[in-house]
Image 1 (cartoon, rainbow, N blue to C red):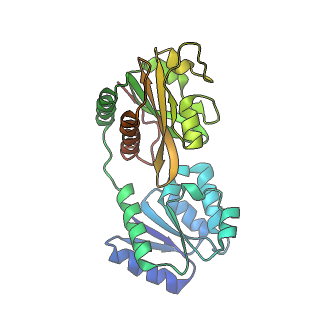
Image 2: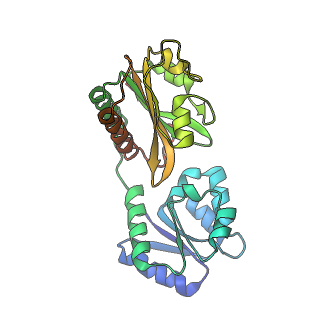
Image 3: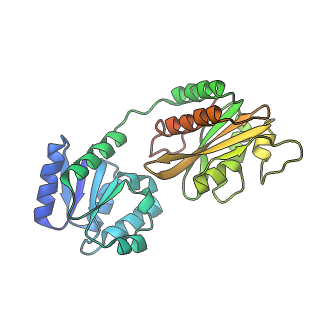
Length: 275
């Protein structure tokens, strides 16, 4: 893979091309939003340096089009812009989905680091489905959980990515879930905050707990998964017994959530492993 530079200022584009090559990466240049949109959709580029103020189709429009058709590719975009922060906040609705926004004039070191990090991330060799399943089984055992499910956000829904300990039929029947639903795992993904239910028995009701109670859950922990400050999904833990959720256990489960997101590709689609 290589880097795509989308910039209509010829001198700046030349400088960016030199900078990219100094990072040890190949580079391709375009000065048109229309051409850039087609090129990005080929998924050939691990990084896209995108100017927002382009003639014709602007960078804002490129981002909007990608969000509608290829939202997973937004994580490959580094925006370079001289636009005001107010303009960015108003027009760049997908700002949280983009890898990074860097203001002009930019710091060369900051941009080089962003290019390197983004490229490394999108050329990583991800674990196989079986490796991810085994990893979940190990974390469930060490955390005292009977079952665990990992779900990723895609177009305002939570899609099951991998699971351990749940009946496959229940997982396939229950997902995808609307992000706005009241399930603990949806609440964690929607709010970006952990949900700790020490008990779901004894008359204590929580909105839409059936996915868990059907599996005999007596306690639930649902934790958001973050990638570069953006919530990309959630991990839900099911326990066969009422839990205390002391500081040590919470820290273990939070660490597992952070480790899990690092194992799941940003381009994930239809990647479901149940064991």
